[in-house]
Image 1 (cartoon, rainbow, N blue to C red):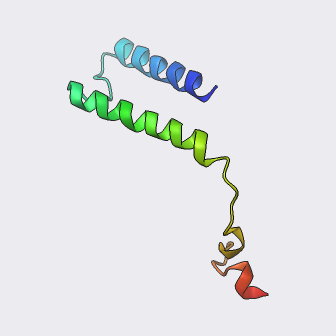
Image 2 (image 1 turned 30 degrees about the vertical axis):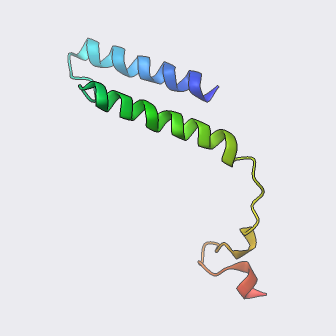
Length: 73
């Protein structure tokens, strides 16, 4: 679902830039485009695998004050 929304947004930005006659906010060279593709694929793959791991150090994370819950107890 996220990928489909991302592609739809990319197409919408491309169409809007074309209609407004402004340059696309993308790298003009092939290597730049491949870099953007690699970063996007890395983000998607990391999102698929990292989101399912258990948070083992959540009790050590600080809240709004920055003080960890384990230190307050």
